[in-house]
Length: 363
Image (cartoon, rainbow, N blue to C red; front, side, top):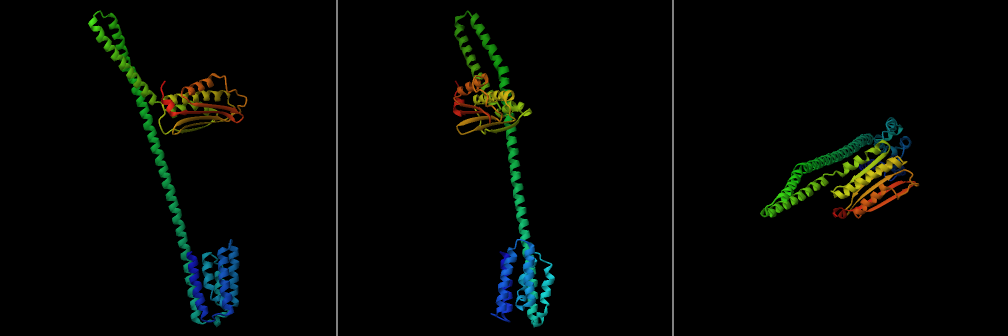
């Protein structure tokens, strides 16, 4: 747009200069129309060779008609803008041709000054465009680097959160073991001792207090047992356990593992998924003729899904009768879930869907 405005101003100045000598003449009209046409064609030309030809035609016309000489500054703008520098010598030759004698000095000086202005305007416009492109490139690079830093920071935060989560799980597991090995065993010995004391006791007045103490110890043992199981269940790292389970596939298969569980699943669902993946991995290693395995675990608002696929030809496989497959069905049925198994020439597929509320119902 800037180039169009600058060329329009130069064009109007050229028209002003020629109008003072021969306004409304046929050569003037012809030069005006040719200037507009050739300038537009030079700008729209797809190759530099076409631009050279068009500019050369206009300069050749200036050798034979003084009206074209007045519009040479417009061509000078295009010559500079599109770097048609070899035509510069021909351009000045047209100014010093035999028509020069018919020009008044001030008009020739005006054309030369206007030519210099057109060249300077074209150079400045090109420099401005180059700086704008560099600015856009710099801005794009800065945005790209900023996005990369944001992505890296997010990855670092996720990694840090994952490490904290794993450390928390390990600590819970350690606490559960400590309670089980120390407090649990001590309470067990105490309960057995209280039972023995109750048996050998002959004093009727101590029978009721001893039974009360024994019942209190039994309740404490039950409470500790529930707490230990709760801590142990929470300490199960489903993603880590699944990665360990599919590790044997890495020797013979290309494994794709997609784990998308942002929340915490009930331990019953975790145990179910781990058992199914282990059984599926064993079956794939023993029977699959493929070379790719895809395992996907996703958490949805109301359910959890597990998908296991391989690309082996399983059209001859039977989907019933195996103990492993029956165990899969039993585990999923206990949680009120759905298990779909299919085998064909495209591979073996297992899809499990369990409602999260079912996993929370303890039987």
